[in-house]
Length: 224
Image 1 (tube, helix red, strand yellow):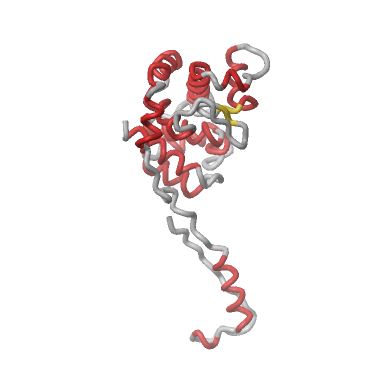
Image 2: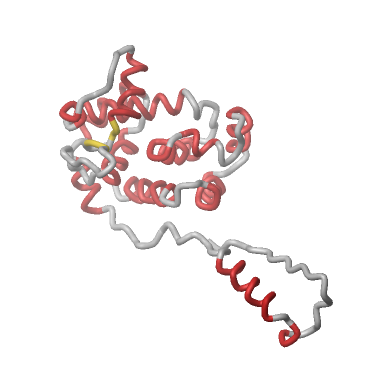
């Protein structure tokens, strides 16, 4: 989406009318400024076909339904995130050491779930490669986000978008795009429609991939 850039040129010398009157040094300065005013790449490009990833993720739906019921999370959302995160491959390990169907990191989301459950330490890689444990912990982490840092978001669709982007980039990074105060950030989020929230993420979130992740998860859900 286009980014408007306003450039103000100041000089102690009179600015002559017409393009020819612009001093060469000011023209070069203007070019440098405009070069920095680039818009973000369209998060919908390149296109993504959810058909095969969703089909592979659907085989885990019985587990997603069980985990979703236990943690109050939509099984369809869990399945869509599996499709986007791993394409349904329970043994996938990313370069950043995210593991399994829902690409959980043991040291972050895994540790957070362990702490919530009153357990010490963090899950092992083999535990995270277990489909039932992975999906259960992924659902638990989404529940922790919904009832913790994102608590108070009223619109269901906005909450889904907020959960998705917080799952991959952290709730703090999202909330800080609105305000450094959590309560004020939630109030600002509640003033937005789902489309306006997505637009805000696309324009303000520090991670360029954040709006694309929301978009891909929604495409996966629509493909079910």
